Length: 134
Image 1: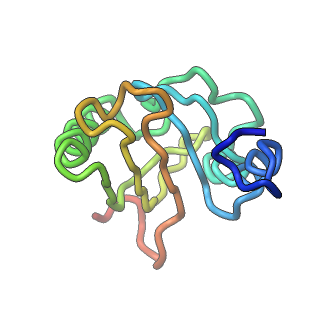
Image 2: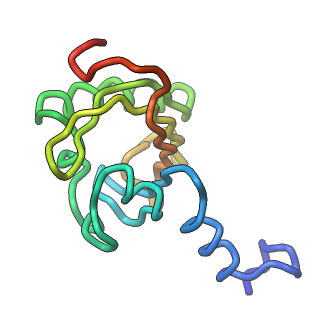
């Protein structure tokens, strides 16, 4: 058990809470998936373990969107560490959907590179709008 945890909580408790959270959670390093929970996998249509080690680019509609959103998020997280937006993302089967994304950099001077540097909350955006509308 870590000295940083309350005496009644174990590392296994934290891992279970992460995995069973009702919202999609992601940990990435240099925009590569390190870990994600069941809700994240379900939202994007991937089986367990399929995203670990893969670039986040596979979740974007195009390489251009991956680069554009990455540049925008990097600038914001260097200033405030927190970033949030709604964007179109891509499921494994190619279906596009609106997604609310909130991320937090651990190291604001290098938001994409430090340890487990970005925690993302992913949730399908509310409303009935088509993927072709901003």
